[in-house]
Length: 287
Image 1 (cartoon, rainbow, N blue to C red):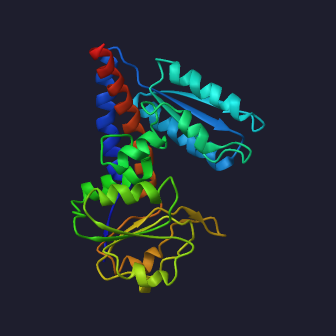
Image 2 (image 1 turned 180 degrees about the horizontal axis):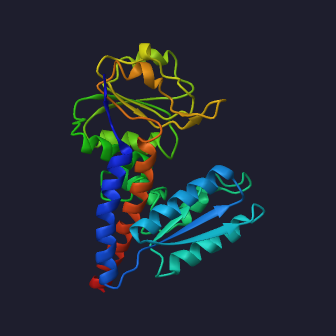
Image 3 (image 1 turned 180 degrees about the vertical axis):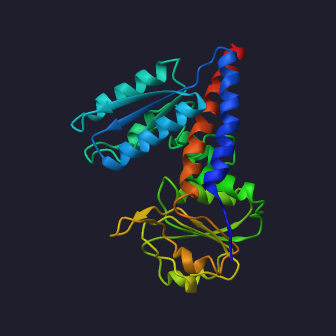
């Protein structure tokens, strides 16, 4: 039976420590602040933003939300980002995805100052991650790496298979795991004979959004299994990409859904905002 990797508990511990750091910054006259931009009325996004707001409040980070009409132009969106870049009281900027299809999200990410890019999507920060330099790492991959760290999992020499190649999870996670000297295979919708790859994985990460897609016969004995998927069944139950009940019996470690990677994503966002505020303090000291 696999050891359960409890992201909920780890997230609590991390947020407790971040609150202490936040209080110290405030004592020094720095009030960490996050600005979140949301375009349109996506219901899932509303829930995510609410959760982020709550987490910021718990730690003591100021939070400001900018709700934009879905008919807004690219230029108007970029103008707002530029205003926030120039605002010295704001340390982190987050553009909640998805945004309406008539807008170019990558162009918008490029406009966010790399020093305030707490989601790690600006090309400068993506490039720094590829070069294994200190940077803002995308929150979900960063959360996964913290889980490995908490459970003393040494990735060096292990074969990691990641299913999903999104810019949010799959691609940055390749770099994170590669930087720990693992051998990385990336699989996606065009991969043939997926089982051939998954059965060879010492570490298996699924981020495809298909409920219970990874079954026990696709998983190697004693594999470390990370489930990034959050899916809702017809009955309304939240499940991951992994057939948890059966894979748990075969794996050595496994993350649950809910309570695994999800809480860690928000904890890492908080971490990145505190980091941005600290970096800003250092810059001021150098001037």
